[in-house]
Image (cartoon, rainbow, N blue to C red; front, top):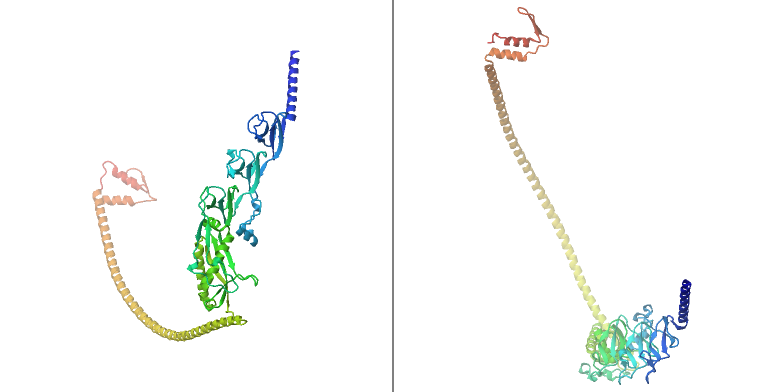
Length: 574
């Protein structure tokens, strides 16, 4: 019974638990899908202070400051209510879609120099955050720090990513990040900060201390041709408002556009031309020559901006187009007129003088532009037209006559030089023929002398060879005589040596016999020994048959003789 009661209680508890969990799951569950956030609103609690719209303290009634991210959350539906809002997504961009400077057309390049062009493509973005609640910032404050709690645009920006921000508190605006492509630098201008020093005016001196001469007919002289007065604000230091000296290198930067403005400026060399494009668009520079002729030249200038001076250029002129409009164009026209007016008309037709004019133009333009932090590589004179002074309809013919006269004079000079060179060539040719003949004579002389020398050398060689052979034969005979003498001496020595050897052998043998005889005691004993030693009978046999009978057996004769000698009382040989 108790066992069943316990089982029933456990089952009931499980059912109650399951019911509570089901109730909690279906009534208290707050599901926030991906890409969304939930803004919570507390329906019960302490009332908000006057003027406050967002609950900042735990237990306050109203919209809560923190939001719920994607996922499952459990809140009492009696106390809490919620609304789904989109998450804040800051795009990271796609580098494959970026359009760089090498793909721009001429119109886009013009916009780039004017500062109005913007690169196309999916570039990174930043989030400019504005806080909608809080106390008002101090007067003049454009941005506020996030930790300050003031209402307004935050100093910090959101970099690419996903953020769960309460849209009742924060408003986010997407702005493009600062992208500095290769070949560019970014000039930074602080839009907030301390006031820098006052604007200073600098009057630039007139070119060469002279005013430009009168221009050609139909062209108006401007003040830019005479004097350029620059009113320039000094570069700002960090923390000051204005253009900073330090520039941004190529890369991606997340900069608050309310605090800093970045102007991309192309570095390196560019081309600026004042030439004749068409009859309606003729940008050639016209000026009078020293002899009264009107000279029209087309000039191309190769110029550039050094990265170290990019900030000064933007601070002074605003953009690259104004560098051309305010400096290069006016100075090019002014220098051309000042220098060109010192040359005669024929100097612009002659190659040498034209080169001198171009060199002087380049050097003077470099000097003037370097003072303004603009680098000029070359001023190239590409087109030159010479027009005679106003002479009615015959003006063009006069110009052609001048060209023709100069050309004919040069042709005459060149013809005279050609004839002189031809005479010099003929003289050199005659000298060459004479030298060739001398070479032939010298060759024959050398050949004859060589033959004589060869004959002399041959005769001397044969004579020397005969003398050498005779001397060799004499030396051979002498050596053979010495060899014969040595052979005679050798034979004599060898004969004497053999005689001495035989004599010594005989003496040694006689001495040996004498010693043997002395050893045996008498010559008869020695003879018996010799006979016994050398005797070798093969068929003789001795038989002993007793005394008085002597049968010989030659094979045993030696033993019998020896035995007899050894018997006691036998007579000793004498």
